Amino acid sequence: MADVSPSNLADPTWWRRSVVYQIYPRSFRDSDGDGTGDLTGMTRSLSYLAALGVDAVWVSPWYPSPLADGGYDVSDYCDIDPRFGSLADAALFVDEAHGLGLRVLIDLVPNHASSDHPLFQAALAAPPGSPERDLFIFRDGRGRGGDEPPTNWGSIFGGSAWERVIDAQGRPEQWYCHMFAPEQPDWNWENPAVAEMFDKVIRFWLDRGIDGLRIDVADSMVKDSSFPDTPLNEKTGFGTAGKYAGHPFWDQPGVERIHHRWRAIADSYASTPLGPRVFVSEAHMNPAERLVKYVAPGRLHTTFNFDHLWCQWTASSQRAMIQTILRVHAEVGAPPTWVIGNHDTTRVVTRYGKPETGWRFLPEGVHPEDERKFAQYFAPLPTDVALGRQRARAAALLELALPGVPYIYQGDELGLPEVEDLPVEALQDPTWERSGHTIRGRDGCRVPLPWSGDEPPYGFGPGTGQPWLPQPPTWADLSVAAQTGDPGSHLELYRSALAERHHNPALGDGSLTWDDTPGEVLSFTREPGFRCIVNFGDEPVPLPDNSWLILASGDVSAGVPRDTAVWLSL
Ligand code: GLC
Ligand code: MG
Image (cartoon, rainbow, N blue to C red; front, side, top):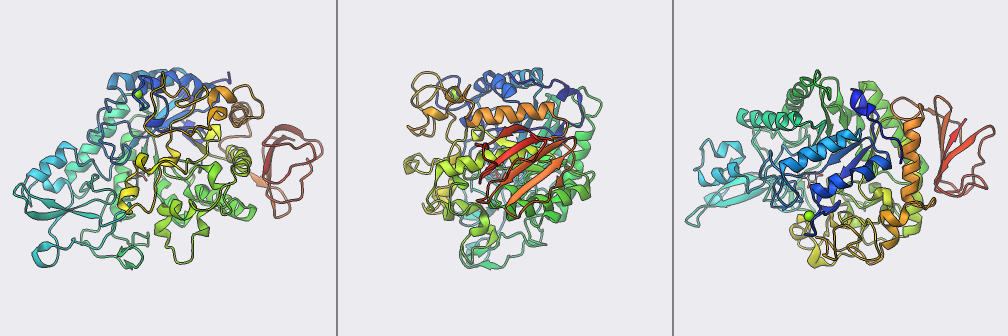
């Protein structure tokens, strides 16, 4: 077992270097055989995570939810979905995680609720102009009879961002705003009661020993109160959601004030045994100079680096992305994060096995706002899974060698591919319906994990009950049990790399120096005495003299071949 670091709990700067493992609770581990992952399954698997060598976990939403958007539609912010367990189960999970030295982050979803939330139901039942309605964003429609939506805004999942209310007599009346699915009405952050409610929600969880919060769409809460249309996107027929400066629902000035307010709450826990609590921002923001405004002093602590997630697997793109991210973060004094997978994106093994490996390949004319529909353009391209896995191994060593905070999405340590051929009857992502069955959406990266055994459910749950999304019949060799002890496996590569991170003072927070290498090779040194080399070219790279091999993502007996990374001790 790799050594765990209970010292992680003693160190208030843990968030500057910790490796964070993302748990998507529905798909992690099922203890009761209902086909849905749960908290007891998570708690029982904590020893797996500690032995893997991560320092923290981030748990995607575990709140009561109708699961219209996989739990990002919250109907009670201060409870646990009964399918996942109870508040007592959550307390046990947090205690056991802390006992193993693991920090715990959870998701906070402040932009929108579930349409099942009692306050939204009360708003629907109350008349236009009522205080109940003012907690959400209700507006009269435009045109004759108010039949047109109040603005031309499009929802991120497709269609209009406005849904019309039908009253008890069946008559259409006002519209409400939902930037995501209609089952996710947006809160009205202009109303002080909303901010006060979220202050309480944050304290509720921090009082229960949660170490930090991942802020869902951290750039979206505030809308321009004049509700202007945005320039038409001809392709969607709706106003553009592209994040130009001054866009009416992205990155409005009021967002910063909300972040400062939250930061003060997190800092007020400084004298508790767990120390100050932390935030990670989920905001897709370009260019990187704009992204790091979210982690300026006094604001949030870290922010997801989506430039990494969508960067092409080429030496020039990776080098440019890393250099920019390091530079802009250094300017604000925040540690960068590194992200090659999450529950919203085609799995890295599949992405890197495509002839095009980053979002920059999007066809001519596709607006950056369609980034989210990346998978639509990506899916038809053929996948070479063996190549993708080889590159994903190299990418893992690269990620874990960089200064800052790496995120590992559950299953990426197993090298799971995207399940691109889920039967359409199984698809649950709202994107599938809202795109008129043209975009399959994000279910392919959410298929439950294989733990052991030769056939589904591969130990995901007890017995033979099948999980909520079907697992491929070909995953036996990818299970945790099958990979454990196999030195060539994806899992053992991750375990070795994470164990090295715990021992090696050069890894974690800090800086790097680029080595002088040919353009197709990335090579950097970190003090004391550590080097990472990644070869993207055909010419094998000889190992430098007077260096000792720590780890390699492939066979380096004749130098470092293409799509391979090494860690060296100098
Ligand atoms: C974030 C989540 C995604 C969710 C969306 C709306 O992007 O990662 O899963 O659909 O926010 O909450
Ligand atoms: Mg279950």
